[in-house]
Image (cartoon, rainbow, N blue to C red; front, side, top):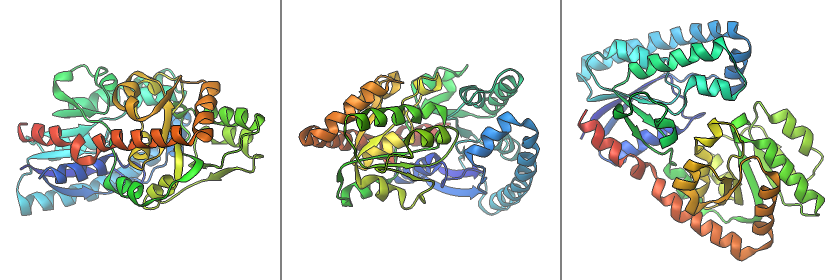
Length: 363
């Protein structure tokens, strides 16, 4: 099987996707070595750069240090081990793939391109020159790759050259399935975890909870994370004693924290990007055995519709109605949890990378 070098500044503690790919490729018999110097840049930092472009110089300085370290390690590894069969550049690798293209000439490069920089900036309110500049970065990154991975067909259709691409759903790591097996779900508890970005539509969740509260329905709710829409959500919900805000849970503890709840929430925005993605939280929550409520978008309907309860994007009334049923009807809740487990099993790291491992062999 293939000898693969996972390379770059990816950070699996903040963005688990590349860890899922590595786990899955190893399960499919590939030898995967990591040369990784994680970039500890938060989502808030990235948003700040969109609003205050001069802050990008701090990123460049940090990247320069990490790239120097990566270059030294990569050259030493190549001297000791010869050439790998392929280079895997992880999620958020728009810059890293350019370095990989320079260092590993003649070696196939697989770029996990879950997000388009220009599209993401536009989703978060950027306009004009900033978006054009980031669109240019997307093109440079894609041109440097031999094979481009996307998570949905909708994202794949945004590529100019789909022949050099492969759709690999986000999936979930084994720890989420383990948490689901070993946890006793708390009946009627609701959890959301995420970065409060616009595509997640957390204000829609807040409005749905306010509707339930007005009806005298007071489920225990945990909201984990912080980000762009956090203040708006906090202002709406902080007076409700049953709603608990937690800024951060370590990745090692997050699966168990989610699996201890019976209902998990996905995304609910009406943004263009929100129509094209299935977030990691949906796959992870299914793996953990929670009943999952998320928005009825083309990719979610197609890939996870059988294991989730789908509601119209941006509609707090319909979200409240779905939650009302799950909270009041134990049989409906149990059915939704079983459906989530069954569908979630299709998206283990091993299963989602089976075709990828074969494709890399033939690069």
